Length: 429
Image (tube, rainbow, N blue to C red; front, side, top):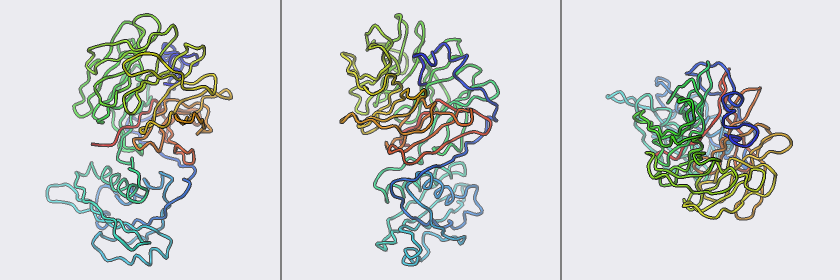
């Protein structure tokens, strides 16, 4: 949450005023609207994969969609005819049509019921093959195989790892219930990890992508849980007296930073994911909350009103003297640090609204990324090139993703439903 303790939306006011109510089917998938393009777009033609017409998923269409929504590629029409990865191709003709890269592939059903997705990527400028992969999966894994194909293309052509094969977590409000949902990075293939009549907030992924920590009000008070996704089992990480909120994983996955009010006003603590070895880290006369670790695990960034209005501070991960980080704006919350440790994303109150900003941690330069006014809960993609956040559109809660240069934005929404509390998962292991 953005304002979970500071004025606009207090933690205790959350039940009454901060989670939007809407009706949506629990199996509803997100729709994506894309605005803007990257500084430069790579022209690419992706042929229809051989045999995919008879398979449960159209792999080549998913790959095209992934690359298009990144804002970094433009799709050149490859025509309707399927082309396999072993077929001969005239790369010069594709270069003449404006494509700097060309992709062919196939989807082959196997005797054991699985599918073998194979593809080959070509550079039409150099007339060279850039390799390919063979990905075997059950029918239910074909979408993820397509995302992996898109990741391979993204990295080979742009030099940065793609994040199409990562996952999202978020909270959907539907029919008076709150659902913690896990989906692909495009909002598709969603499933419910937890459904509750009480609010669920602040989901956050473990570094290995197997667990999600979150706050649930099902016990009529905020309690921090750790949910193991493969098994569906969960355990309590923090159920101290008072409020337990804002969990954040350490980069090694061994600790959770949390915000607790057990000793009066809210302060930052750390705890083992199983609830053991609780340690107090901050000690101020104000409210310290929303902790998040730096990528190297050396620092914890957090929100504090110790100086008056809420600002972002950092302190050593083991506790100690805090240093103020944000100075532009009177109201800054919800810190998140990029995977390379160079950029801070946060929410700032400006012009009567709440907007997503980024700050260069070496120069202090600050830039706004959005034109919306109800932004909250920023979360970096694993490659650091995009930020997922919650906002509002048409009076409903939606998720949005913006490139860190602000040029490309996606809106992910559920028809008739309200989604918020997003967290972008790590690279799949």
